[in-house]
Image 1 (cartoon, helix red, strand yellow):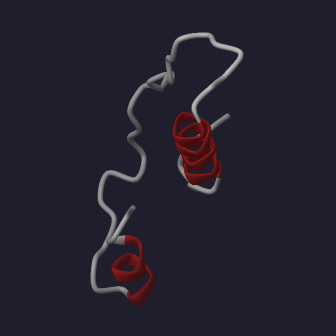
Image 2: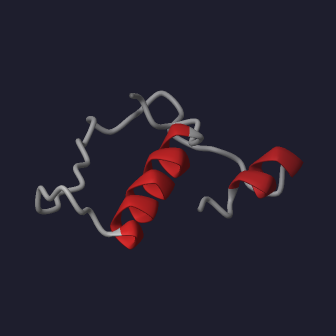
Length: 60
């Protein structure tokens, strides 16, 4: 979670170095291939996908 976004929106924090950005970093979720994938693992992976898909700074 990015807790600073509301503070940037209100002007309490000011972004600096806006012209600079870091190189992309790939992120992978690795788990054992299995026909009976744990519900917990599936829910966790789905949550990560949703979390990162909604983030404004993440490119897919």
